[in-house]
Amino acid sequence: MHAFLVFVLAALLCVASPLSAQTPCASCLNTVEEGLRACLGNAFSSEDRVACEDKRQAQMQACVAGECKVERDEQAVRERRSEPQVPKRSGLTPYTPTSIEWLALTANAQLQEQASADRPYSLHVVEADPETLAIVVRHQPGASREQMARSIATARQVIMSTAKRHGWDAWVKIQERVEPVPAKP
Image 1: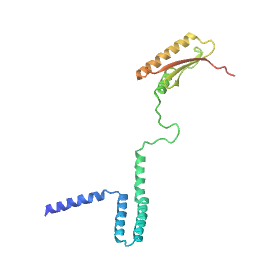
Image 2: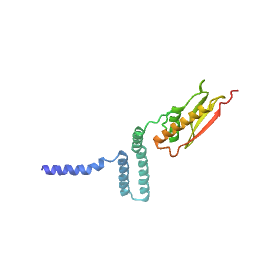
Image 3: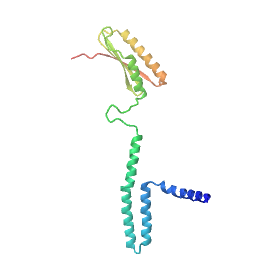
Image 4: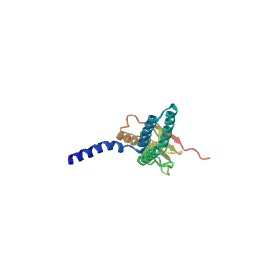
């Protein structure tokens, strides 16, 4: 007796599991198809068959607008939750700099010099092109060429040692631009 009950229970679980695993949308669409088969089985004329097809079309649209739409909306909500939240304001969008941009940033942070009373020139490191950094020196009249040359040589060494640490020394190029400070009008 117990074996029979276990057998019946197992059979019910095997048969019922696939049916209960259907989504409401799939269940609705399957019901419409079953209704169509029943309607076509009772149809006598071609007009009856056309009426069955029209009824099926209307019921399918109702499923798509009802249960299927609810499923799509729920899926969209799940997808939105799993997406990383991207800030809506400008300036907050994540950005990964290129290798040369990163090198220019770090080199400029280490080497940038502003003009002062004892040093009448400024030094900045900027990106010239995707493989080249430019050491830009702007000097006032009477600035020591030797002092500027030492600063440029030091900047070259720092840039190349930083590039070497990252494995970029094979392709990084360095330019120098020495310019007088523009006269103020």
